[in-house]
Length: 438
Image (tube, rainbow, N blue to C red; front, side):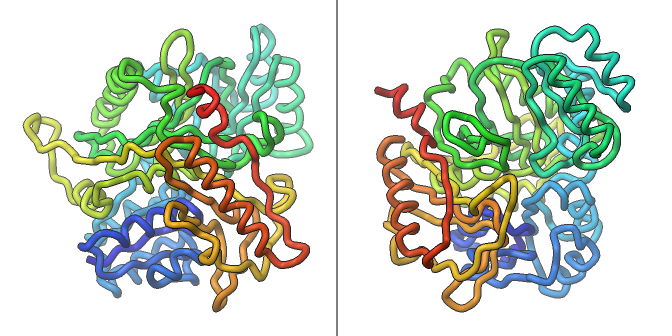
């Protein structure tokens, strides 16, 4: 079988790496891909993830059997719809399902309509409405731009006054991140966060191993928000069997019922970013694709054949009435995985390209895998586009061993970088779960 992975980040490298392990996969392609996918198969480096007509045409030409879509922008642009219309199996929801991620307002209204627990909210469409809504606001407020904003559309404010300042900027001299004018104002919840990624054909649902990621740039969860500076899996400091059962019953089941009730054929990854509050688990956000960097710590623990799982979902004809249908099967190792992101200097305020990066092969132990972010392979060196350059993902018998191995790999790679080249990372990834265990 020939498989195409759409995207160019660490998530896509991890997906390609795991798919390549399947005996069913005879050819692997990536559009546009990166330095990592180039070593696993063939990159279609001239195609962006949203070049829908070109991706469809080339997939037909090359006889692609399965397309796995990584980035949210491609889903929101309707790439999955176009591929399905062309008769090509796709793992990834169509534009209608992707609205769970591409529109924060749609997602909040969907959750309210279908009884999915989430923070109280108001949707506003201009500065006047926003200021009026904050007039009687109590406590902190989370301000979310409605559209896709590449991780820059969410601001956590300790008070309504702070919120007003942000909105003055968004509606005044600047613009609302992601475009448009709609903004969601949300109550500030408290509690630990956890990411629950599932794969579903709209009827059946299989939960992947849980993960916790780190969004802030600096140690101690300080600094600006990023796309994610690291993650760990599993999450024993947050999850237990009772909580997992509540998430299944109170969040996943009503979400799938709601999608079917709304006539949305959802085949892909349904990612729930949750906060465990005193009132129970609540949805902070839905993503319509695999998370980054969560994928880089979940897939190294997966024992199942990823291709077989995703292909079964993409080609499923199970109807909602097929209660006896074979459940989706997925298994994970008992080992832990810790992923630490190495980012270009100054990220996320700036993302400067980094040239002449060596391949990390000489410093990698058997327990460590390096996943490239946006990059291009030139012989034996890599040119990275900047931002999140590499994720060092390490497996261990526990989080402490995995963490030690990941940071040892980061330090070893730092020693072989060209003179004057600097990559930065947080030093506290998975530290809380290690401390909790002790």
